[in-house]
Length: 117
Length: 251
Image (cartoon, rainbow over all chains, first blue to last red; front, side, top):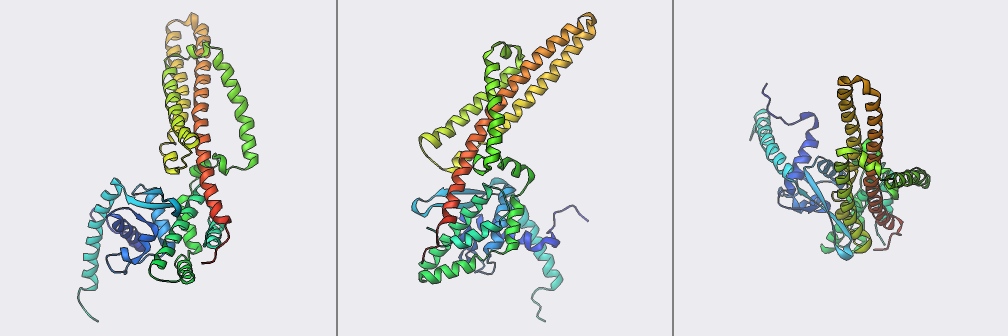
């Protein structure tokens, strides 16, 4: 077995959600509600987040220093919190992308690409 | 007035994390609910339907709330949050005042005696530097809070924790200086055993002066952190209470 990083199969959904949130943030800061709206999802709403799932992920990533929460006062609209990637977060995402691409490739090998039952 | 006050109160009741973290989570969720509501209005939905859809979308389960609590909870954070004036109970605030006031008075009396600072040796300079940095930090924050009346919490909290680290560093400096001096005293007394008692007496005098100076410096830096973070916490809590206390308005 090589020491190469692999996708954590036991926590597949959790790690997948983290990578998705980080990927959605790579183009610039976004509010929580923007992340949850399917319009932000390049896959056309396939990976839509429920708010209940989103907040623990955002807060965990912020605690780990991978994203940064920015409070801004938007006058009569009140305070809003948006999130953006940190330098550490960008580096993390770059590594994770490699890991996930390999995972998907292997997964397709196992289930058989393009086969219909 | 907040149209989602009822839902926010429910989340607040289930969220078992200390203040001010709880207020911050509530403020964030409240802002996102409002934004989603406006999004639905922008899509052409009526007010009532937009509220209904927003509430449905934000149906945060007990499991999710536990997951948020898990992220925010740590024994150290819980301990530090308890020091924020806005989040302590009246009994805790009284106990802290009763403890701190005599310590501050004693520290001022000792510092006025003059000689103590001189007896602290070279270790007094890093302690003094720490106080200058902490006071400069506190002054900029207090100027923003009390003169400019700018309640931008992000700006107030930025680098504020440096004050508590300075305070801990000052205490550590005092102890390191005391042990370093003890080592030097042992070196001297081992080559001149006749004067051992005299060396020890001098060490005791220098050490007590150094530790007292370190404590005064640490108290000053610590107070700057307690007062400023307490004010920031009370602003956050006040904002969250405004949202939670407001009656749900009709859409």
